[in-house]
Image (cartoon, rainbow, N blue to C red):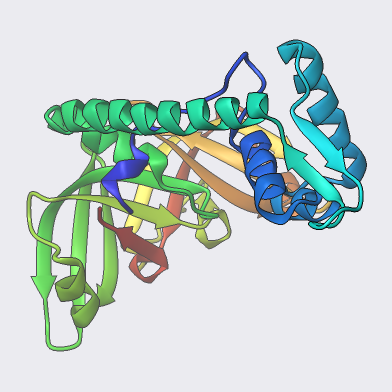
Length: 262
């Protein structure tokens, strides 16, 4: 993930003329055809004409004009008003990009904030994503054991290959994210005196039960506020008589945890 994703901003002129509109304008200038330019910019033919007409009405000047026959053949070309508008867009886009780079540079001087935003920027299908720091790292000949300490003092342990640990540059004290699919988590409400082999066992309180047609999503809030979400069949919900406010422990194997680093 690039640091450049930490600060983004969409540039619009007059609140509605965006990059897609100017891609249409630029394409018309290049190909001389609204039909072909619309496909390039992702508009339908009707949609392209609609946005052009709206912009023309707002600008009080035509943006395109049609040429019929002649030595250069027919087609559509940009008017001087459209060319001026396109030039202004290019200059403003360059200034806008420079502004974003300046804000990015300032943000990267705030390491705690930048680190939090990096974690928030990551997009993954894994329902559970926990940011923390590597508190223990043991690299063996084949596999490595990584323990992340989360906010609130909770620990999550992952088992990864030794080559992956080296490739990612994992180190004690470094920031990382633990990702766990909801389907990999087992909820236990009563151990009945048994001890489980699963390395990760996070005790908390059921805070949410979202029941679906076949399965439900159950949120377990840990001391400190972190929430672990498990995907549980409706039969299991009924069998455990799960309800909000009930103590429960989220259990998952170290092999079910993926580790991500910036």
